[in-house]
Structures are given as structure tokens and as C-alpha cells.
Image 1 (cartoon, rainbow, N blue to C red):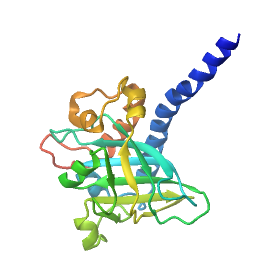
Image 2: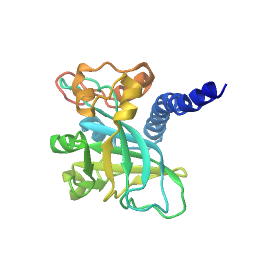
Image 3: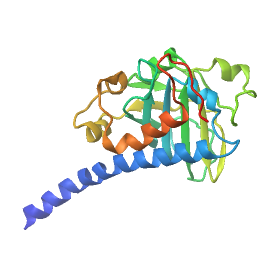
Image 4: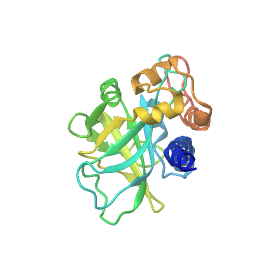
Length: 231
């Protein structure tokens, strides 16, 4: 009886993780859908259409954290090499640093767009620090990017947050972003690195189909790599 109890206690965290990872994919899909459906308050469509990669972290924990404390987990996806469609998602963790939130332990949804090849290379490294190793700026809000500043035009990464119904650009500095090999193992059965996952050779898991379909809906491209109309 004791052996059965010990075995049950040992596998319970593993079962919980198996449920948690795909559930977070559903949450990421909801975040993207709600933000892009918000009239005149979402991410500019032309920026999403021209982004090389996207990172979505739902329910990011914020507040009184020490440097190195975990903030949250999410997913990244990058353009397929032919410019049409998006890759299978890789998992990420964001932690530490100052992310501009007020102390109080609230949660927020975070979206980052990687706008050029240099940013992609840093994003797909095992770990990098936002602001120090990759330039990051608060992204403009609205259906067009006419209000973007010079800093936004030249940033490798643009970031936004949504908290308590408010959606705005976010100055994200000092936090680290790293791949999560354990969560990748839950999705793909082995500890694949994110660079391998987004290469186009890894099949999208069933639990991520909804998220990838939404990315294709809101930021489709022809095989020439040019943005297409979302109307």
C-alpha cells in the first residue's frame, strides 16, 4: 500500500505538467484572439504581418519579485522559411529583471514581436537578456503603426502587455528569456531545442493547432513573403 502511495505521489506532478503545458497553449490562443479582435486597440496589423517571430506569455506573474524570480511561461513561433505560415511552437520562460509593473502581485498577458533576423537569432539562443543583448521597445497600439517612434522602428523586439482590460506598449528591460526543454519534452516527447522546433521540420502538435491557425489568420503571407490582406 505504501509503495502504491509513493508511486502515486511521484507521478502526480508529471501528470499535472502534462495537463498544464497544453492548457497554456489554449490560454495563449485566447490572448492573441482577444487582443487582435479589439477594435483599434490591438497590435498594428502591418507589424504582426511583418514580424519574424512572436512570443506570447499568458498570465505573467508580476509584483514584488527578486532578481531571478520566475515570472511566467509561454510560447514562441516563427515564420516558416518560405514565408508562408508559422512554425510549431517552442516553450519559453521569462524571469528576473524589472518589467515596469507595479508591486502588488497582479498578472498580465505579454506579447513580443521579433522584427528582424538579429532578434530571431537571439530569441532562439538558450538564454538572452532583454534590453542588454537585444534592443526592445514598447510597441505602438492601434490598427496601424503610423504613431510608431524612431526607437520602435529600429528595435529588434517590440512588446505589449494587457492587464485588467488595459492594453499598452511595455518597456521590458532586464528580464531573461530562455527556452524550457522540460516543457518542450511534454509537447514533443523529447527535449528539443527551440531552434530545431521552428526550423520547419517539426510537426505542430494537436494542442497547438488553434494558436497557429490564429497566427495564420491575422498575419498570413503569400509564399513571396509579402503580407496579405486580413479583410
